[in-house]
Amino acid sequence: MHNIGFGSRSMAPKLGGPAGRQEQAPIMLRCDLIMEQRISCTSNPDQAMRQVGITLLRAGYRFVCPTPETQRRVNARPGNEWAGNLVDIFGWSRPFRRDVLPAPLFEQAMAAGMLVADSGAWRSRFRFSTLGHNGFFHSSFPTEAADAVFFGPDSYRFAAVLTAFLRDVPPTARAVDIGCGTGLGAILIAQHDPTTETVMVDINEAALRLARVNAELAGVDGILARQSDLLSDVSGAVDLIVSNPPYLPDPRRRLYRNGGGRLGEGLSLAIVRTAMERLAPGGTLLLYTGTAIIGGDNPFLQEVASLLRNADFVWKAIELDPDVFGEELEDGPLSVAERIAVICLTVTRRR
Image 1 (cartoon, rainbow, N blue to C red):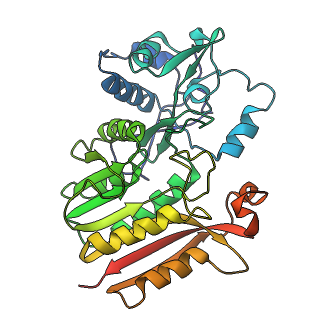
Image 2 (image 1 turned 180 degrees about the vertical axis):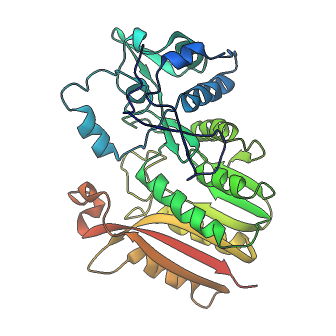
Image 3 (image 1 turned 120 degrees about the horizontal axis):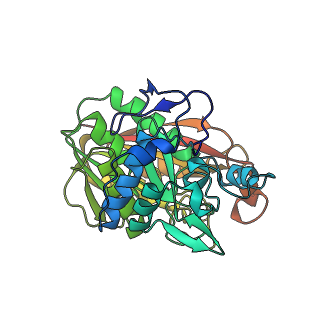
């Protein structure tokens, strides 16, 4: 028997359900339950990855993805050199020996192209994190590749803000998630109102692949996925634009991390400009982003105020977390900042 490693009680998610509602699961879920499942195999890598997600969720798998610094510190602790359970493999990105992973799940993951051999061990190329009843595939740790797909604490905060927003607004005819990454925003919109025409766009084809898989896993197959720089390949007016873009300057220009501009604000400003052009009357942009604070001022919001001055929009910004990614202040462009704040900016076109 292989212990998944959840403790004495766990929460088993319903596949494809909305975030936040959970039900009790049997005590001490175990990997040997996977051995008893009828696990279908397919030659389609995306369908195989979806099957891996289904298998993990049905087994009661749960993993809340931490910051990269937290993941590094936890993995560096004595005893964490090797994976001993599913969370270690697909959450903490630790190397594992072949016998740790149940054979049916190993076959699924191999068919999905998820596993690589590494100096006598195996590693997963992807992590699998959970939020409510949903599961999200994203890149393994550390996220070094230029086309890595990120999911972490910002994703959980973005989800909470978006979920609260959707509860308080009337039904939306057409919505777009710009820079969708794992597809989180689009998935939450589609689950909230399946009648909404929902589109998710990203410049990163690797992100779109995972977003499609995650959407199918969440039971919202109707989302349109398009490779697009902002809305360049999406026509027409939009009622709701949501985005959780990268907001840090990155000399390596990794797509998931590089916000562009002097302080990482470039992409966020471009999204505001795009929203000004494409929002329908009464339409709203919900932008979750980070901003450098310098001398008590917020240069990003100053620029937003300048863009929207005398325009046909109303806007507001709420600071959600006053201090994130403090290590970024040590050197580089953000060494002039006193802190990095996370905000939610909403911009609405008047009717």
